[in-house]
Image (cartoon, rainbow, N blue to C red; front, side):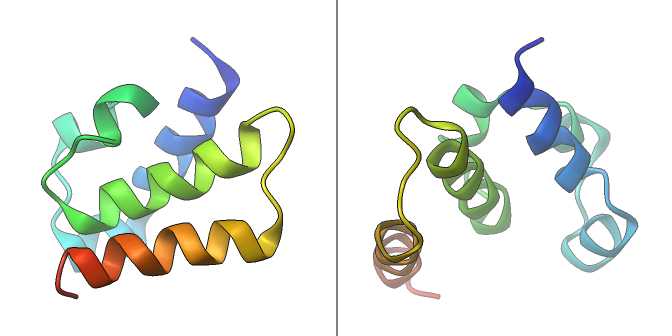
Length: 77
């Protein structure tokens, strides 16, 4: 399993996220590519962050903030 998949799954297994967003076991075991197409906004948002931080070259904080903000605005959140 790739490092970015492990990082994503670590976030998705966090008790606070599981309880608050009702993440299923299936959600918790998604790979990055699958999470980027998730219909759950919290899953896709975390996947976008992990993708930006694990990309080469790494996305700047500002670029990552813009990406996440644009997604959340488009998703209507």
